[in-house]
Length: 493
Image 1 (cartoon, rainbow, N blue to C red):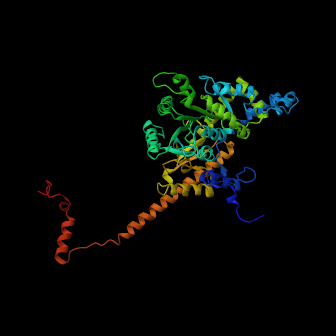
Image 2: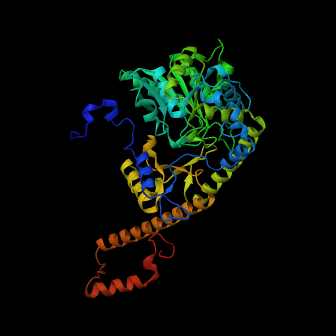
Image 3: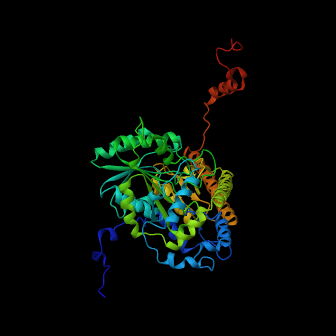
């Protein structure tokens, strides 16, 4: 075989950096992979807090699986379906799977909206869903507008193969990183001024990495904006079933149901598309189940053809069709999962408060948006990455820096805490406590040294007195209480 890297034999996309593997978001994962923490065998390792994965309620799914062997074609109870399922390859998906998914999507949204099984398109996870939507909705060089901070891997999912751009809608901590219409319009007009064609607005609701939900009024504003400017509204609702506190989650589907007709302030439903997955709410990323739900017939048709490149295994569809159809179990699962997520969120955030660290107030997701701005040597992205590397390599926690989420304010970090058991969480909190206390101690020492240095720079103090007779007069003057009073004092007069 000839020498050389062989990169000249590959496409520009294949050899480019579009995957984002060299970003800090993935760099932390590599540190974990090289030295993974284990309670029994490697307590000195790196604890994985950069992976948004729900491991808190997998026992419920395990129990359901054990009590429903007929849901698997690899058991005596389900073997009668083996031939049908093993030979099924229609990219429309199993009818019972699409019906169960549509039913569950309505259930997880509180039964406030219904979904049409014929609009459910299968994909290989939410990554596949976003990649497919980008292919359907935009051409290379076109852009989506995305509120910051946003999910780090969107740069890969939406852009790597499609060639589109993501342009930020700048949001700020002063209002909890809330999306405003002014910021949206400014980003849109800025893109147009640069000659970039905006084809869509991409949002995550609930937000990753903020762990917050969008209000009904914000969603209505987005729908009106998209309708007025004829751009798509892509709503990633992958954490819809991971809301554990008020306010309630509002799906864009509710806005479509309310405003989808020909009414003032209405919403053009042809421009609205939802991405969903079972990876987060159920903790089943290995099943690679993603869904596109579009109100646009042409998008459904194109996406369904594209799904040939990322079909969900028919065996997985068969199992999930039965589990998702069990409405009683689903209701129990969602309620218990929310309870466990709330408890975990409270334990983590209260543990941080013990050492003076706060997080953005959140009510959803598998993570917290942690504020370490006070620990930066200065408010720059470089200082944030410097602190992050200390946390990765010395504290040995893989957290994700805000810069990897395109946050414009250095010092914020996403910390995942639903992907571990209680004991591992306590180890992580103990490490954070030690790190923060040592940091504060170093700060005090540095302040004391700086103070001593300032005093030293002033030089020694000298007392200068007048000579001979003047000295005696001065002594008498200083020894008299009257000398310390103002000339206007009644006692002096």
